[in-house]
Structures are given as structure tokens and as C-alpha cells.
Image (cartoon, rainbow, N blue to C red; front, side, top):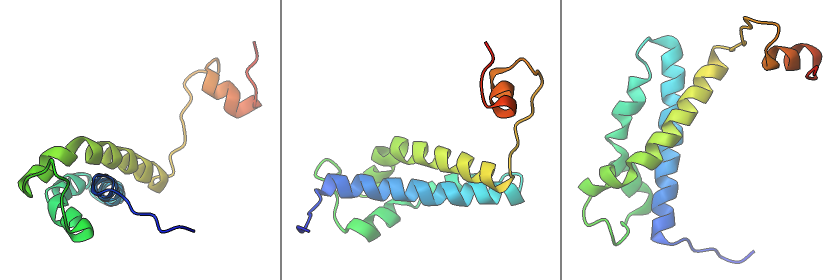
Length: 117
């Protein structure tokens, strides 16, 4: 396999996504133990600049200094954090859907395996 070299912009994005995944898992698991455990992940967002610089050592040209990392990384981090928070929380509590009507599409799919038309 050839030696693959990523552009610094891609390394930056991947490190932000990785931090979103890590903080999302921490938030989801903490939320199952403590009522406001999901706030832990939001607090960890504020150290994203340290995490990114520890992984990639240099910044993309459009980011002049470390303080801009928080601003540039927010939406990428937020979407990964939200997804993995909800995923890990749902898995940890062993969520089971509650059906309020036997006429619903979800009820029919889970009970019969098909949708009766």
C-alpha cells in the first residue's frame, strides 16, 4: 500500500471529529449515571484546542492562532458530540420503544415483521 499523506485541513477535521466522538461517548455514559452528565461533554469542548494541537502539531493556513480553533471546530464537533451522546445514552439505558397504538407503522413492523396494508 502506498504511503498516504493527508492535507493539514483533513487532519484538522479528523481530529475534531475524533474529539466529538470521544466527548459524545463520555457525555452519554455520564448522563446515565448523573442527571446533568451530558454537560461534561460540553465542558470538554473547551479543551478541543489542546487536543487538536496534540494530534496535528500545526494548524491549517486559515486558522491564525489557537483561539480560532474553538470557533472553526464548533459545528463539526457539535454534530458528532450530539450523535454519539444520544447513541451511547440509548445503548446504556437499553431503550425499548413504547407503543401507544397498535395501528402505528412501528408497532406493525416490530410485531409482524411486515406492514399490513
